[in-house]
Image 1 (tube, rainbow, N blue to C red):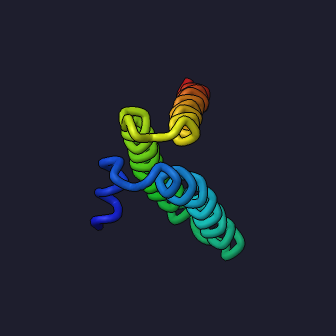
Image 2: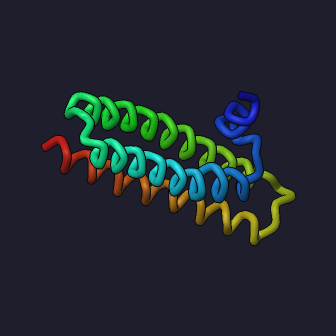
Image 3: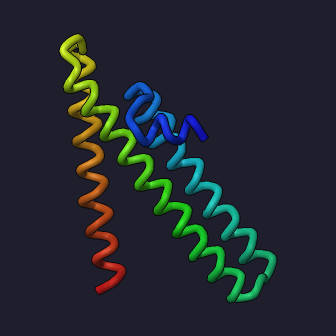
Length: 116
């Protein structure tokens, strides 16, 4: 639990926040959700169970997504505010914030397409 809170507050290194908690966790979560959906389909499970999987998966993904983006953003902002950070670290922080913004814009576009 402490790890989750430290990430949320931006207390983890930017490298760990971005690569481990955002990039690697994204692929693992997507593989888990897609894999369980495939198992449910191949086992001929009811539509109700498949819908439940979809909604639970959507909630889990959304909570993780917000947690990951906030943690990466806060970690990057701490690097940018630190006077002792090297130019390379600050450049990576700018790149991380840019990635967060791009992901938010793309996600907002996808949500808009789904809802309207």
